[in-house]
Length: 171
Image (cartoon, rainbow, N blue to C red):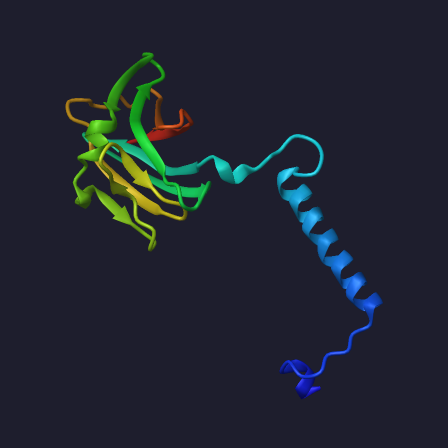
């Protein structure tokens, strides 16, 4: 047995090799179809588009805090956030609107990374790699929340994808 495991004489039955090959091929094709629809039907490869989860979105006097977590997408391609907006749903207007230039100049101290993959400002956007989780704390400037209104946080990716979350007003 030891010589067989260490590349000694190998004598395998052709039927066993053929059956093993068919089993491996079947498993490969099954997983391709199950996860991506790769054999028949429309492709549904969910790993091609980034997905960001937003949690703990809250706004106090002049501070917006929220946590982002990148859960899906291509691992070698980050999500490039080019927009962060807070909309007053009651009044129907944007009260905070950060564009790509402003996000690319965010100071590092407003980003509290939780994992090894780091959310960081890039040359033209805020980069969120796969597996990155961070709490962002941003100054809202002159915008002051009204506790009687409902607010919504919307993040925009360079691909056009958007994610939104209702914001809790106050602590």
